[in-house]
Length: 538
Image 1 (cartoon, rainbow, N blue to C red):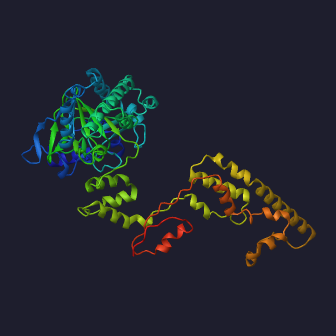
Image 2 (image 1 turned 30 degrees about the horizontal axis):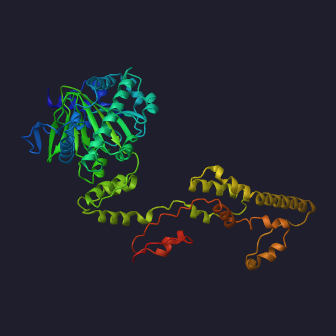
Image 3 (image 1 turned 90 degrees about the horizontal axis):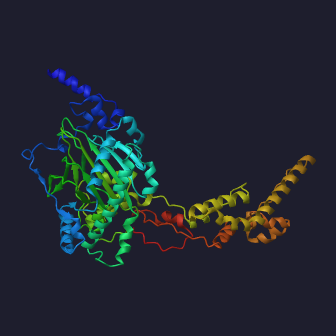
């Protein structure tokens, strides 16, 4: 083939509409019978997997035998020795293989088989569950993060939320016909295995001791946490040295329990080298997640790992990811851990700012906090609190009835009350509202009567600012209905009535301003609130 013909063929391979990529790499392989990797999947040279350890010394050619933990021995007299092996695996590898566990070989085999058959379904069937919504209960997609990846990965996936299982089961795919039953069985048994392994890990950390009833409370915290099954399919790749099944990453949760078929593909970073994990039939590959590294105060390591593909066989794996859905308190002074946790709390513009920090510009957590505070501390908007009610004013031409409704709506929002909680306040102001409405009605009648008689326009009573010190005399000049007009039922009175309902008061979260700013101007928003402020520096 001439160079020109080869160039035209490669151009034709790359001329693929963007919509086709979103349908998955398996669809591309089936439709185009690819002989070359499309340009969208080709990694930069520095990020590609290497062919041999000769070319790059940081890649080990031979496979790695991960530490093996015999689950059956954890339940016997040899438990202390197994716990030491478990601690060593989590500390120095971040991975281990779990054998002789409580899940039968038949359940494992059927789990791998049914997920392989799902990816064999026609595209029309799989497309029913394709979405880019990260919050979807079920999501079928491609690559690693298909909406953000500039270079796509040679992988299709199916993600199923599994907790609470009875509520989610009916949302799962109906094809293949046995997928719900098989995955549900595996999810339940894997959850029990996760709890047993977590108990051993906590014991190896010295957090709990064996056979103590009080330790059950700690373990119960993990029972209702999130679980997600992720099935991945990696088709044969014509040029496996140009792309990856998944890029180097660490898992976000506490633990990941991985089932895989006999095809190699998982690589982990061990002693600064990429090594391939040798599959063991019917074994779980268990790895430490970011949550567990933080929970262990950095003792157990969440290790980078990646997936390589091959040009001969497809590969199927199923991961059970177990994460913590609630906020955990972090008690540590370790700068590395604090700096690792900090970006997990960022999103949007703040995360973009963090990602844009120059390399090696942060050497400790105090520096990171200082730079973040200078960038954002004085730009945060203050959320409304109960103290904010003091600023609510009845505007001109606003009836007391409308003002009470507006005031009550804001109280419910701020204090998280049931709307019925405001019924007592409305009942207390009922007489005020009725009298004001009667006064308004009398004013309208008088205005209409004056117009018919050709007299001058009637002006409703307005308090004279020059005589505020003598309001009683002004009110005496009015009829008895004047006592119930808005001048007497102002927002101060309504606040007093509200606080009699014992509405919880939430003071605003005070943030220190940037150095050099006018502190008086910065705290103007908080005038009238009794709260101890941190001294503002010059």
